[in-house]
Length: 250
Length: 328
Image 1 (cartoon, rainbow over the protein chains, first blue to last red):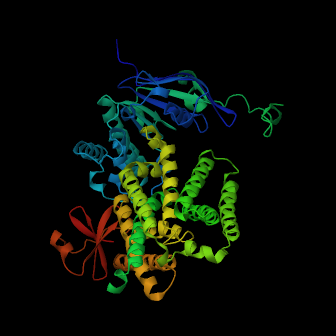
Image 2: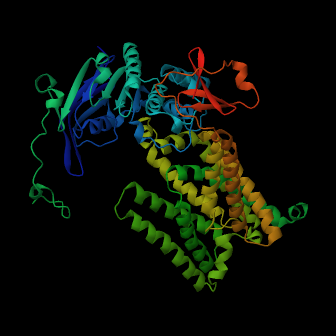
Image 3: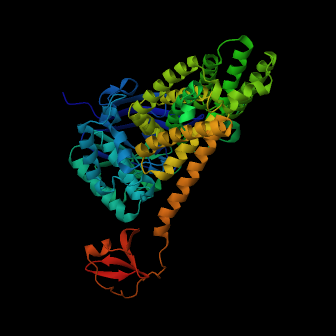
């Protein structure tokens, strides 16, 4: 019997504030596979990733991580999550302190950093090429360096699945190439990757396949193409929306 | 300095103030990170209700205020976590309701607002031995929790979503921070006072963030600054015969101003750079040769300029470009 997929989700339906965001979405990532999640603004990419990580509740469907249902999954050190760097608010912290957080899934409360933690943090900083910036304030970094810091934070937990939300957003073209090289090396080492992207760009060479979302549904990219994705049926007219006071559809 | 230390009430007041000076910035670090700097002020209002209740019933004020304030803190956090649109209004009603009912109950007990002023602004003579035991016990618990859980609390304050995916119990920790803040506010009411303790949770943190790089350095730095302000302010209030809390907070503000001035002076050396036009695309002007020893000569300022280092001397800015130096 083969090991279960790091990530497997079927038939996901997600509504936020009464509006359907994801409709019947299924996605899986096997060990050692690098998968892109594509789609335009508002297609539901970020919601899907946040749902898969348990940050947004789903109304229907099932999610399993390494064969374990999301609700009972506890082995979070196997997962590395990289949110968009603009979501991180840091008043005063060094690059190394941010990356150290990645070790918390391995440490009990009240447990200080052990030698094994320091080694994993150093290794993660080395991988993303920020070893020389470890003592720098996070706020003083460029967009690309911030993104690399957050990738290092995820790598510090030595994950088997890395999930990234638009890692190239706000990163200049030169740094994008560097990030793509890094992710390619990680995929070669057997890390499963799920990467939300607005467009493939320099990541094209790294990825094995892409899943395209359009208006909350998975579409066949071979036939439609990411850029030809038409917005689905027009928004329901105002009379079709739930009454904001009673919550009852008119 | 020796004379006040021989007085038993001064010894108790100093010990209580130092403990407040340590724990208020420790918990304040996480309150400031969550952009809830005024939370302590609101909780102070709720604690006044506890003091009023104690005066009316004749119970010991400190334990009653601790219980009332913690209950208020739980309500505050639940309102926040459930993101109710009316949450903001709910907080206002809770805070002002606490203040008004506290003053009202104190009045019923025959004490006007004047009777409350020792609790609002701190008073040297009001720390009893029993109070000191309660303060010391709770302060040790707060220190152990904030320092021991600091890595987790830091991760949550930086990035809640990421902390969830690490398996950290974010809601529980957020609730813990608010409850610990409530306990900190109440056990500081004898020394710093309920209306001023919030300042000691915020100002040393601001001072430390200005003076130290990195979370750990500024976390422990803030505790040191808080303790220093508490000692100076307590002794100062003895000699000046002023409210302890007010003296401590003014000291903390003076320390913040001092750190700002020192920081400005240190950065001033870097800022005074003779302006030389960017060389743009025209041909480079090779500067006289520099070697590594050059940077260490007196009168040479070494500054980071974007992705490279400039050396400033005699009105010139030089930067290494391959095997030679350019004028910058």
